[in-house]
Image (cartoon, rainbow, N blue to C red; front, side, top):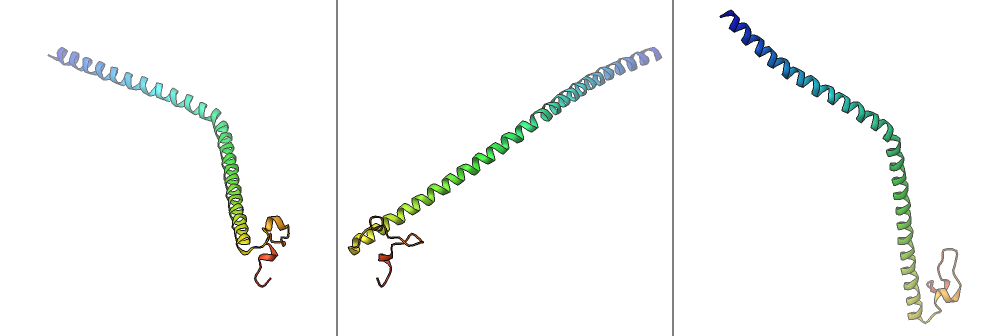
Length: 113
């Protein structure tokens, strides 16, 4: 009877040992994978940071160009409106008269003149 109990215990322990061995192998492989991943990240991190800086610079340039285009569109709209007002008043178009003050306004369009 003891022998059978001992055999059962040995078989159970062998099964547990196999399970423990599988877990150990899994964790060893996971450890190696994580080490490789960390090494890769250490190599790639400077490249990623450089690309992020390039992206930020490109975004800044794009926004600056958009602001410049919007400002130019606004200036064009103002110039068109000034020309329409000048035509309606029968005065020379500011762009044609060439007489603009330091602020880019047509003196003939001022009140009281």
